[in-house]
Length: 346
Image (cartoon, rainbow, N blue to C red; front, side):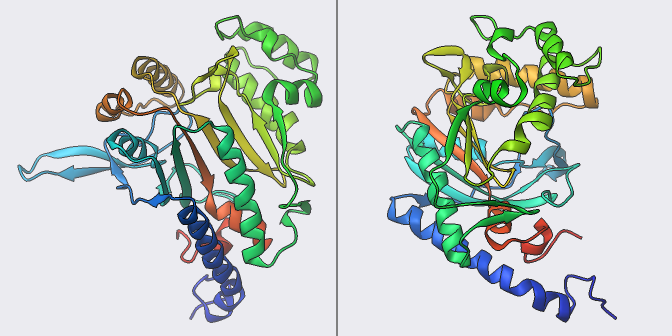
């Protein structure tokens, strides 16, 4: 017999159903908004040669058996990014997807091993346009859910308020007293010891084998993120180029990159880029990320050579990924991601 702890019990489902119907309304509102802005919805394949090449993202692997009976390693993607950028190379200019994505080693109030990512790209447009998109999606979600405020764990955020835009360097100085740019040389190369000294001075633990990125992440999570998105949304802009991922350097300062993250109620909701289109630089970054993954976790993922080839033909573009389930959580006030998934992962 089912108990109320089973998501599929009639009692539990009755409690969750209003949230799930709000999810449907929010998705319809965002779809309608993007359609009015001449976006084409696409449906990228989830099974890929490479799941993504970021150090701390962990994929689900499988094997595809060919007609010759031979197995080939494949992965469920951690993002539809590679596939969607190939579509930009093919000539698409405004595309979006509500893509199911998979990330291993992630489960909790804000994490599910399988979740929905809203990802969209604008060819020929600056990445600041994505910031306006993000603000519009917050408003649409709240309106569709019938909410005046976004909420999570006692924190609230006004979705109608203009986001507070602040650079990572400014946020580090404001909330932690850390001079981040002083730890990067003119080419963006990081000085690990310089950042370690500043972290130690603000009483953060630094291990001997911590890299610059390890220390940066600790300062960000411990001292910066708790202050973001309370009362009004926050756009944390201009990440250091060391943490650029697939973003291009800022034209006015090569130490920083055209990358931002959106926060509401202390929750990270979106990650946007002015997209890098240099295949050689992207290959270098991927190789460095996979070397670090091998050092930390004893594994590496293959590079998608087809993606790197397509990158040379991709137009200048900006792109953003938003955790759609998290958006629904905040708009409905749900305490856990599983509460807004029609069928949670078992």
